[in-house]
Image 1: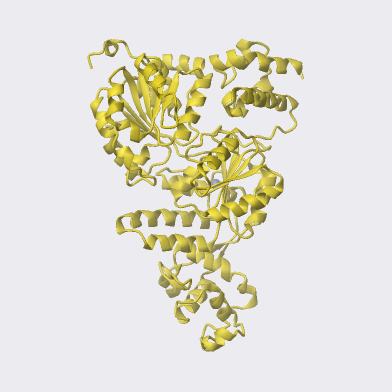
Image 2 (image 1 turned 180 degrees about the vertical axis):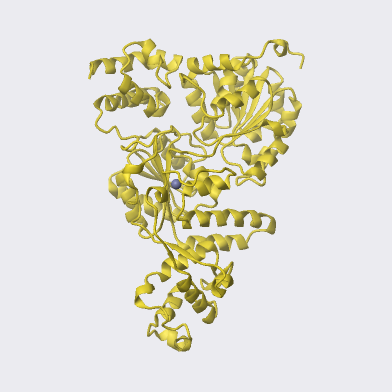
Length: 609
Ligand SMILES: [Zn+2]
């Protein structure tokens, strides 16, 4: 490119800091944001792996404001683009989306050609078309930002063939730097993204995967309705509950609606209109619970989600990290709760059998990590982070196991009895039958099969009988017991080692579900009152009420006006002027001008407290 702008001096990090304060109202960069920006502003292509909530979008929105030309953002979902557009516009950034859902496409293209856009959001299938390339030739481009970049990799957990079509466009504009962004990618996937998008190896920047404000709690599913009802009672603020099936979603949404909390369902079986309406109701709400299949969430950029619950086992450890990552993006305390059962593992292992061999190997590793995550008595966060290649401390202080270390019993002996009974009954019966044999039940079917004649008949005493199911669950989680297609149990994995005495089996003694945490030992940053709960601060409550009114008036969700953390800071510092207000984190120039007077008025009414 012979463009004159190439000869202009490139902006540096000090200028970026000034713009950060002016546009976003933030006093400093977080995490690796400055590292990423240094590369982007210098014109180098980069892959940034940053956890959700670490401020990924800022790493292209800020250059978009600073560099001459438009930043083209490739994003996989229209809803996600519209969320981003709303937030960027609220900060005074000149942005537009070019999607099939937009009726102002002509005007947007004119704005692009006229150099009036800092940001242009587009889906990969549009970006790869020739007329889009022609459009891009009509005005300078500052940067290509490729969001959710793991979609380009077949190794990733969410491959999208459309992402593969981007490369010719990127290569055509070879002098424009590329910034690929993702929140979840293991080492293999990261290497593949670099390769697929033509980014040099030294362009990889990895932030830690840790989301310290999320508390992980994982517990066996025992009475999901009761367990989830209790969760709702303990957690104010918006939340998502993932259920594995549409029917499960409908049932849970229906029953949880009786708690008095606003609850809506979301799954692929609902009409697009209903889905869109439910989604926007959730995004705008401050206390709604969305019961959904995993179809819900990828397009959601709602920062104030206070909990994410899984009513069944997630698809993979990556999915779990990504789905739970939708909680607490604003940095305030949030919880992630998983309820799991042995049948979840049976189904997951059956699915493995249906895959081709290449995929199966990777998926088996993912499932095994998931099994160790649910079965561990150790820190959950440590297992998650190790999977993503980190070396976390042994304890985090903010997961159920760290807050209340569970008791562990060695149940190898009982496990051997169970495995032996499964083997001796011919590996074709379900747990119910095996349990009857082990406990010596006078059951007709047991007698008819002659199973009362086996050496394992009645070898489990009354004191141990209650542990048969938990032990079976543990064996299924680790893959030593699997279900046949007819629902019978059979030996697999390391079952033979256990039988021979070469491997041991520990059982985590289940705690009272969801009641395990003790508030005394919370880690720094996790306040005692649940976030999103105004508690007993009337000023904070009044600021929230004002925010609600302003958001309604502007037709945006409340968090687009200000985050809870910004309101909390206002309530604590009680600024008395626009200048003082602008010092608060999250108050940029545009928002100070638009909302400043209204918030100062409410603060003024509270006097000196
Ligand atoms: Zn922990």
